[in-house]
Length: 220
Image 1 (tube, rainbow, N blue to C red):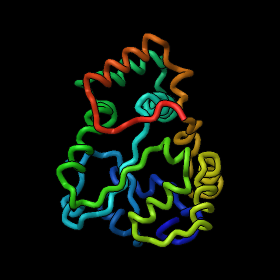
Image 2: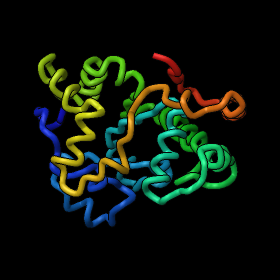
Image 3: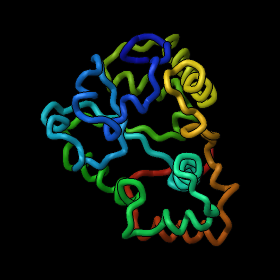
Image 4: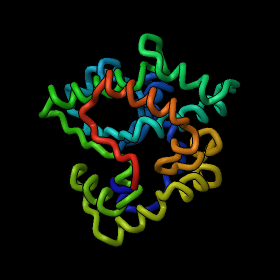
């Protein structure tokens, strides 16, 4: 919306621009300006990504909420039939892959890339900050992208991209939308309704063993 300078939904769902879901020819055929989504690690990106210094927006979230969200994603997408506690045993394993890799490895590799490549344009966004102050975060992103964004446009984008509105648009507006597999609650702190005291302590120990530089918001 910022690049289009218009608070109108893109007609295709985000999977249509998911880097790891398509062969190069499909992505190359997309019309500019192209915005790709990806979950891959830096070393899995093509050389042109580094050579052209592609603008990168790195989105992070409280890892406890990530775990809950991923649990439901796996239930819907691959029909995972276990309990949340069983899923967490899988999520917290440190030597076996969870999607591309364990959460902490993915996060640390991106943080290391950002630190070691200060000339590569990277913009970091925390999901919780977007929820708390969407308009300011949208303006901050616009500054990074070097695209105009006045108060009116920022407010329109914030409204259109609220969790519920985006969920509805994915199902009703976008071609091939599957909101039921991607969108659930989008609530900050929903982990509290799933974690037991023992599981929370276990997760905290996991975070202490694998510290990252990101500062996470656990309450808003």
